[in-house]
Image 1 (cartoon, chains in turn red, yellow):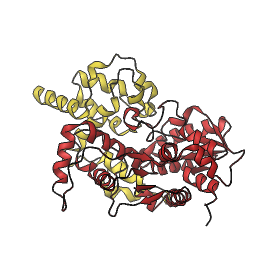
Image 2 (spheres, each protein chain N blue to C red):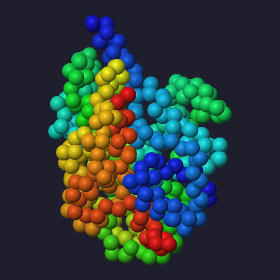
Image 3 (tube, helix red, strand yellow):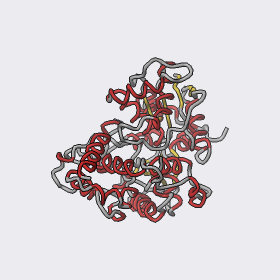
Image 4 (cartoon, rainbow over the protein chains, first blue to last red):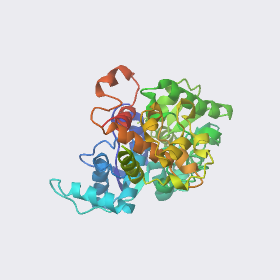
Length: 264
Length: 130
């Protein structure tokens, strides 16, 4: 299976592990990740105002690349996934927005056909759930993570807004728990798993981010977890920076470990 | 002045797509907001004050920079009012004015540490600056 793979800026710098283990795991699962040639940063956050056009063009370019290759567009970073998925939804559902975006795109060197949200946007976890299947994943596991108690940390970006992301039940998700089970470990359910880590506020108000992050890591610990798993570099940063007593790892790292491709 | 405020309100409603009249004042948005303690005005107040055209206090309050865009208020509102989109529209209305950026590139180096992911920087710049 071939998919368009959008790594995003942080995976090239501070979150290289998130990217590296995604690539190794994809290969082990028979998925070919095709990176768009000149992808641009998604911008990190989706600006919800419908009159914001230019800030969404980088996502549209990536989406058009995937559409032209007739592949789904896959990301591992929660932020990239959120921005690209929300942009695609706006292209499908907001005619005024879409026509303004297409007017910009018509000015490109090799103008593409007008885009109307045709590409399929998948997070790497959705790719595993919907295209590979957790049963197939389970069968591919070489080193089951038996006995490990792992807390899935969804945060906000994978789930919300629920109407747009359609990732899972927005208040009671199960995809990462199913993923953890497929790897042979035991998921830990805790109340703060879909609450915010503080996000970008860490930059100018670290005290605010600390409060939110500690609420998450304490909640996971108090419910018996030994480890927290995330798909988001900023969630990981905030949790670790603010003194999580549990280790915080990327889901791709666990995946590569279970598939036996972490060290090659 | 009155007309200017009316026009501004209309624009905020248009760019956010929010209809504050749908609000039934249950307060769930503020109850679930992780930044409640840091805010001078809370999500439910954003909704009611925009409805009554009381924009100035909101636009000059640091509260517009405390929203995490986590969308908890959006998904947990029983009336689908989407307060976070209203806060975003107010913040944009402020920072789109010339010279009104909340965060400047020159300020960034002093705020960084070795581990800070790029995602935090680009996100903050997108939220706080034009």
